[in-house]
Picture 1 (tube, rainbow, N blue to C red):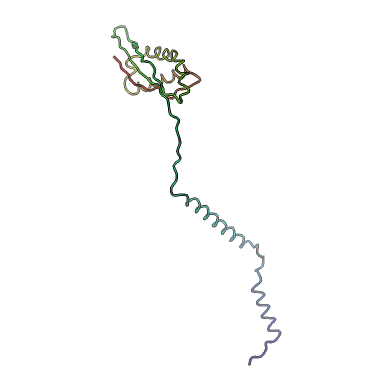
Picture 2: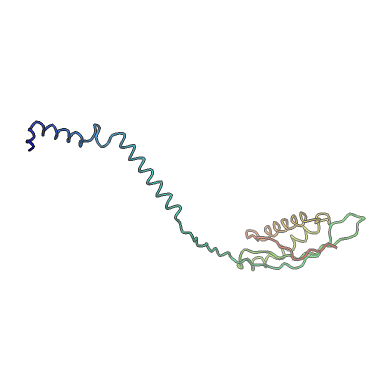
Length: 170
């Protein structure tokens, strides 16, 4: 039979158990524990952020943007003789253009200023030479200049563009 442990031995074992169970010196808020907790928090927040960013809907619904329908306004045909030197034969330019308006509400305003627009067209076109219209660069410059002159004539309103329907140099 085993003998009963002595009182001193029991107290010594109890003291050893208490020493093992007690927190280390420095307590719960030691520098090491704070660094470990901060690292764990960064990992959790980073993982959650990555998960939510990557787990978006696989089927994104397209955003439907309804564009305003543009309005086209015909300008009367313009027939002018081009600027020539004294010994050259006379050349004519026939142009039919369309104005691209941003909305239908501008149509009456542009129609009311159409004589001013036609005057701006004719005075500019009569000063052109046939060499000014050579190639796509010449037509691009003509288009930009006509757009600028229309916008000056109908200010403060603006047209989107001047579009060519027909250009004939004869």
